[in-house]
Length: 390
Image (cartoon, rainbow, N blue to C red; front, top):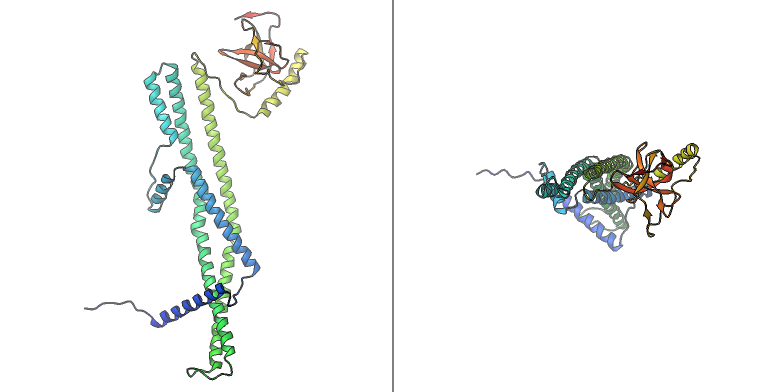
């Protein structure tokens, strides 16, 4: 029976084994401090340090971002396995979508014609939209941010680590050759050993040193070129970071639009306890609008106001006469700062009356079924003297 055995080169195996042993000896002596070692130049050390910092922080950023996008560690492991075996990831419902389904089902059981049932269905539908926005955000963030960074770690950084390992091996070989040359020079003038003269040993050692030095220099240049490329990679990472931020901005904008529409839907439902929409727009928008409308109102009515200033102290009981109110036209749109105020639209007509005690900046307004404070600077009285009974 013929058996084809691999063609082993025994000479190469022995040579490689000898090199490995000499590296181990060299590394051990360096650890013990009994021999010198070739130090890398300062520029190389800075490049290597920057590469190590880049690798460490990139790994942390990728890991933290994935934890934000997919909080469940079991799901992250499952997605990683499916990615490695090149199969599509399983489609799973998010917590928002589970909540949405339960709310919609509960609303149906409570009655679609009942206020609570209607509200549950509206909220459930909004939660479904938020869940879809979340799915899109996770997928887009992976494509534009985490996947490119992970590709950098698995590709470029692994190549750099491999070349640095080869360079370290070449350095150990170089230092071992230097020690052999030093030892051979110390043997000059002594009797030959094993039929080989000390001069021949020195010549061979110097020949090996020149080869080791050339290989070390060549590997050092290769590694430097790769390390220099880190700056280019960071410029690419900056573009990916910008794309991630844009994705976040779009995601939160979509969520805000969904919630604004939900607030309008809930307010339109009415019922015994109507929903009071909450607007979280920047207060500076309201302040600037208040200043402009104050000047307009002062020119038209000779009744100047410095803005809507301080609202009535909510800790002091406020009494208003809602039996008789006056009509007023809204001069420009106003976004309520909190639940005590009304949202106003330009040119709409509402009913207002004075607060008790009278406040120089606010009036009490009625807008359909909704009631609340209205900045005096944003309204113009239509019938100052005629009172309209409600």
